[in-house]
Length: 297
Ligand code: G1P
Image (cartoon, rainbow, N blue to C red):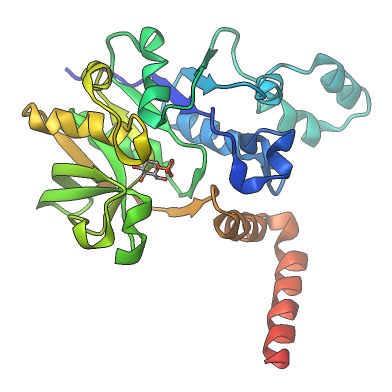
């Protein structure tokens, strides 16, 4: 029987330089979509997939992220006194069980693979998930939950996958597809940030992974890859070379690249419009903006 996936690693050590000056004093994972920080979307997705242990790989200057997950008894007390039930519930929904969260420091920015490797002792010998909070995925069923269900049949390693235009391939890990079975593809190889002409397909890796502990061993062995960094993609590709299964999973949902300004703004609009209490007013404003733009053209 395959083991259940109950641990997830959240690499949150990045400096977020693309969002300077905002990220001078706040971690980018605390930036909000409507009223929830990016990290909360990642946590909710993981919880829906049955994750019980949350491992954050952090770095200097991420204190606000650790504070975010603390209980806030004074704030809760004051909301309770004032009878603000909705706000109290919203606040409580962010509470995590004692002992469910661990923080590990990545002392040097040596790449995503290195960040995941930093969590190896906490993961020990079980399959685990990795969630990159920059990739926010709006879906009816959480993306990681979809993957956990597919993984129950496949085992091996699994990465979320999505078709991208050829000119975007150099921004991603790209899959060399062996067998395309629809939502699931078996993978022959993986290349991190290939040149457009060298991309083996237009199926890109999106920031959700289910990995076997072998990948942690591989991370011990591999050398620096694309961009001079220790790449998670290379450690997963090693699995294929060693004859073990790696799958890509075409998830159902809309992915927003909140590591870029344009993607972050798109997500803000989409999540704003999905809120019943904002839909009418915000939607009307967007319509007005579009008409004004058209009139100006
Ligand atoms: C990382 C991974 C890459 C993946 C991407 C998805 O790259 O290394 O394989 O395609 O996330 O967002 P990054 O965006 O951190 O450069």
